[in-house]
Length: 116
Image 1 (cartoon, rainbow, N blue to C red):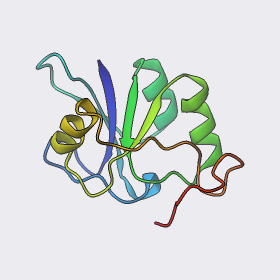
Image 2 (cartoon, one colour):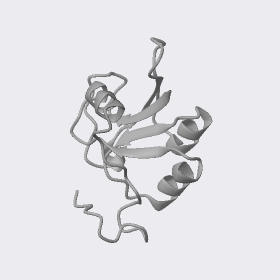
Image 3 (cartoon, rainbow, N blue to C red):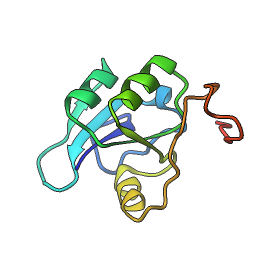
Image 4 (cartoon, helix red, strand yellow):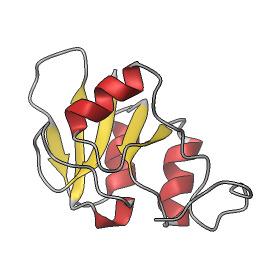
């Protein structure tokens, strides 16, 4: 499964910040292989979509265009702020992470606690 994780470095022990915008980039990796992850710092949505990522592990998302681009491509967004990438993958696999249903301030987030 291809996964993207919002971090500041290309390391499985890197912390995921509380918002997507605070991340320096995204680490893109296959959770089923031991191939080295790719780390990108520009055109994040394009790289996530092009790599056919099934999930994005991140903090809250404020950028509507970024959110829409990955949501329309079918990338599931998981709230993993404060966890390392390793911890977030384990939590995702154990169904312990909440899904991010919309960007902060978006039309679909009524009743959704999005305090960052």
